[in-house]
Amino acid sequence: MLHATSRALKFAGTLGGCAAIAVCTVHIAKSAAQSAKQGTPDASAAVASSNASPIYGVTVPPEYRDWKLISVNHLVTDKVDQLRAQLGNDIAIKAFKEGTLPFPDGSIIAALHWNLVRSDENTRVIAAAFSGAQSSIAGVPVNVQFMVKDSKKYAATGGWGFADFKEGKPGDRALHETCFPCHQPGKAHDFVFAHYARAP
Amino acid sequence: MLHATSRALKFAGTLGGCAAIAVCTVHIAKSAAQSAKQGTPDASAAVASSNASPIYGVTVPPEYRDWKLISVNHLVTDKVDQLRAQLGNDIAIKAFKEGTLPFPDGSIIAALHWNLVRSDENTRVIAAAFSGAQSSIAGVPVNVQFMVKDSKKYAATGGWGFADFKEGKPGDRALHETCFPCHQPGKAHDFVFAHYARAP
Image (tube, rainbow over all chains, first blue to last red):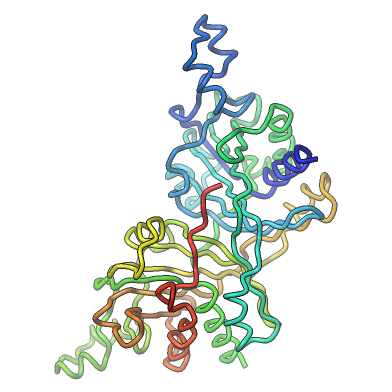
């Protein structure tokens, strides 16, 4: 049940949150398969692969929380109610601003998902002046997803490598098998659903 | 009516969106009053002041859209339905991460507000797998607000200067008179309502 929920979150998140990510090789760990093939199934490779997404071998870029904002969104289903933000590394942000398609290699997009929680503190203040006021904020972090653009390495999946992490750990292979099929409807925008939110 | 709505948005936004802003002198324009007092009511000062917030003299920091993300939130009232993001300059972000209170001089917080719009594109994809799915994204930009921390210059208002802009133009004096009273309930957190959203 928990697993199903996790998968549901992942799948929904891929659709609603991910955008574009170009391959940043420093963040791509060797997969166990690659190590075995090269005859180097050493301990460090095993550790690295345990923190990388199945299929794609994407690891968490250390500084992603400090990346620039692409946009924000809200997703509700029968099971989840989330506030979400998409951040991009400099290559991705430049492409978003300039409308470059396809996204260049090196682009990485991060989709951050939090449970939506009501803010009694905010609501109390706002409701004093505005009827019907309800303020909700980002609560407990749920998961973070990445799209990494490498047109050669990921040629079979639109040039994108995918990853989904919960508390620093990647989801399983079955979960990651849903990523690219889910992004297929976004083909006209290089499989990226997020759009850059204009500055007010 | 339009004015009332604008004021309502501003007031609500101040409550729900702003956080901390320390004085960044480069972004503080001389007010007309200051110029007159100093006997320099020249043309350039008049132009500068027209783009600065009344009372506080805060102008739009040119690069604010590229600042780092503090958090996201959702505000609904009888009249508005908005997705919001708070961004901070480096001084503010450091203070948020380290839990520094009061925020140091130089901190600036930007609160960006967009009308929430339903995304048929996202919803169609997600609803195929998850019942009750509804995805909403940032639509038309509404306004952006700033809090600028300067404990001396703004000593009378908790050390904060405030500003609200719509399409690059500051709101009127009456609007800005609501900023500090609205933030008073947040005194224990240095008059800042936003909290830093942890990385998933």
